[in-house]
Picture (tube, rainbow over the protein chains, first blue to last red):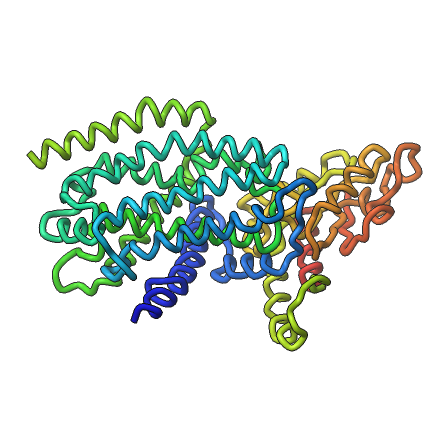
Amino acid sequence: MVPFRLLVYPGFLFLFFCAMLFSWLDRRIIARVQGRVGPPWYQPLADFIKLLTKEDVLTTGAHALASSVLPMVSLVSVLTAALYVPVAGVSADSFDGDLIVVLFLLSMPALTYFLAGWVSVGVYSIIGGHRSLLQYFSYEVPFLIALAGPAVLSGSWRIADIIAYQGHTIWGALTQPLGFLLAVVGLIGKLKRDPLDIPKAKSEVVGGPLTEFSGRKLALWHLALDMQTVVGIFLLVNLFLGGSRFLTGLPAFPVFALKALGVLLMLSLASALYARLRIDQLATLGSRWLAPLALLQVAVVLWMRG
Amino acid sequence: MVDARSTIPNAVKRWTAPVVRWARRKSPWVLHFNSGGCNGCDIEILDLLTPRYDMERLGILKEAAPRHADVLVCTGPVTRQSRDRLLRIYEQMAAPKWVVAVGSCSCSGGVFHGGYNIHGGIDKVLPVNVYVPGCPCRPEAIVAGIAQLLGEI
């Protein structure tokens, strides 16, 4: 059973399928909000295959080994984090404190993203890399504190226990609405999606840290980001929306899928509706508002525990 | 159009080639460069990306980095000033890559033909795959041109 769980469900193949599906749904929802039709369902797959078969250009002065290893490290850390995030109650592995490991592994892509800009020595890459680090400090602090809320409330750092706790009380999003909102904002920052796509803003820094990447390395970067979207959404569903539990008697997988699509809809609507923030606006927002609000939420959670 | 340095055996290539061709047809990412035109065609190209024409239906995305792009969409004649930049951008793109010349000026030099500061059309400098004439050309004509390019890939 373990190879099946690692490779097929809820492992690599399932995540790959979800990454393609979510990426398409996201583009499609944004297109519909803008009154367009949007791309056909096979679009992310076609993009991925095309990028895999394109020429791989290495910039003069770029570090050859680092620029091929970094996208792999990014993808591998996301996939490793996915091992501990249950999909409809099924996870490849679980232990006490796996939430902390997942949070650590999910912040690895931000580090590799910065290093990608650093090793590829382009002007736009380095500016984009520095922006991504600045953004990291703005969103990661409130994101971590907000995700600590459900763990403190249920008294365990094990994701399965947090789901079980919500099963016999109510959803985390109902007990900590502020924490859920902050976690969604943090996830948008983590995924560098539209209102917070400061490190890769096309009209400002061309492609950000990925400007000089092409071919299969770019394909791996895109895949890592799409999979990070999937894992991040699954994590929020588990921590705040009660995993696969809704009403007794309903099958687990459809309920989980509906909740995940609901979070995806929130992310897509945020991308379609809000304009990009400047980096100083984000830094102000992150340290003056988001982090204190997250602390307030944890204080409320401590009070609720009594 | 398979990467010359590729180490994949021919037997595998025979099976993967149709898939690769399909993927390339369905996902042309476009880089837009004005090599010295009057901005008329550029506005028509930007029209293409608005919700009215919705080029994302055909998988077309406008990329800002040459390394990410597949199709170089050029407007305007090639001036002596912009020739080196145009060549440099073309060389930065990863193979396989295609060039579409949009507008009369980029097809032949147009009204600037024979000017002292003009090399001529894009094809004086780069291999052009599709010519879209017009001054400026309508967005529908550009769609037709790109569709023709996708048919040739």
